Image (tube, rainbow, N blue to C red; front, side, top):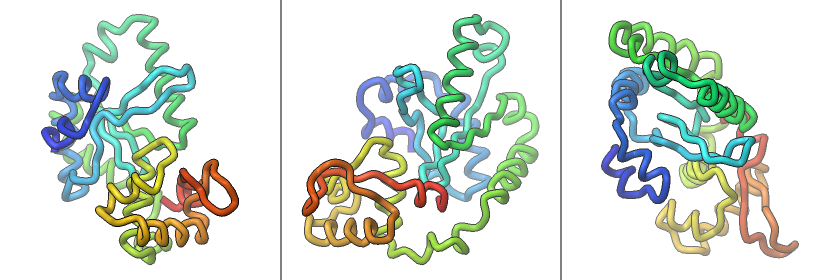
Length: 209
């Protein structure tokens, strides 16, 4: 998964993925136990903070909109500067403003108490219900995949993005987008009354996710 995401990444995110990933690998082992897969997770997902600078999360689940982080004691506690401490609080605050859930673990917890970490994840997921009972699984698979990819995309997305995500030609992709607009899962951004050029996930979809 790491190699694949490195190939797909560009810019600063690629640089982040090339750094030491020891903590992230420890975390992914725990997530594998909890979810049974790590295919849907995104490593070093990028956003823009409330201060206008880029911020990154160790591991992000785009459908559930949960950030999981592995925090080493030396980097995040023992040798942290006041400036870095303030930056970390701003980063977490920015995640919250974006409507993201945040679940951190220390390296010691991941190493010494893996069963407790897995149980904490189960309990955390239990608070947000079962996706099979909230209408999510009633959507056609193409519509679910667009919502999942759009949630990870962060910025507004276009018809060409959807064609790339689904390996689909424009006519069926356009029909799927119209269906999602009609269900109020996505909404147009810009364009005119007859044609929209970009879309974004609605608050209704985010709450349901």
